[in-house]
Length: 173
Length: 173
Image (cartoon, rainbow over all chains, first blue to last red; front, side, top):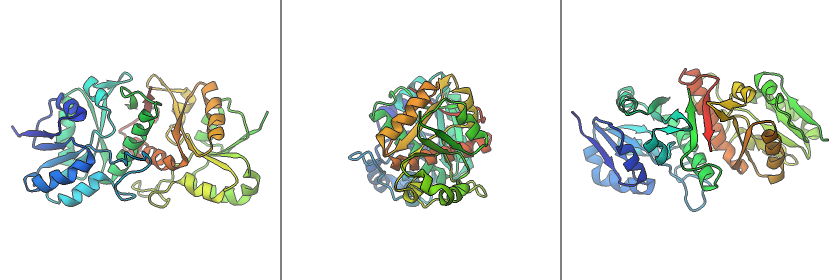
């Protein structure tokens, strides 16, 4: 059975860790500014792996923009640095509490997954479905831009007290 | 009592029209490619009005990008052409069926509103709340980029049969 690694011990890493995901998957559950250091230190060991970026690369000083190039995404930036890994975007649209609860507003917590490698998406999605989540293939890695826009929007709404951290966007299927 | 005008008789225009919105508000309920012609024909009459852009400016040939400049939004493009109007972005994250039903997945249908004029947002939001919706101030007009990313994502998921047209993103508050 392949090893599953979560780098990061914060709220998100802990919440993701409660689901029985398995596979040759490394989840980068750290804030975006910490990603570069991890890629420098562990980049070689990530070759051939599925690498999951969960970040919302906000400018946390202004809460008014992202720190990645306009039109791009954190996931695309990471993928450019890891050409021999299968990079997925996932979890960034889920608040930690809704991952832990596995439901939001009575709907199963939906984890939107974007990536260019179908097998990698299937690997993560199957594990999430088995863990009681609702995995949704959100398309190619280009859709990480839209997932990060959604994550950005959701964070600004929560910080502005328009949403509780136990709520947010649910997916009704 | 101020006049309320909906330009467009399609599904979205009809669904929005079922809510008792009132005020000096013009809703552009037409596909984005039709907006330019309306602004040319009626631009002068829109001075001083609240103008609501509901479009999702997708490239409907590829379903893989928007037709507005990268990082911008249809709403920002419209606002640049209507400097004497108060442009809002709203409704583009709502499928018509969820506006008509006023609920999605058991949650009140949430209409996310972005704009730079607080009074204009309040005018639209109050009317929507009175009509049984749940209006949410999503921030400045710059957030139209994120709302259009969300609308884009939701449309691609529905077209890809990952979501029903009666569902989509609900806001859990």
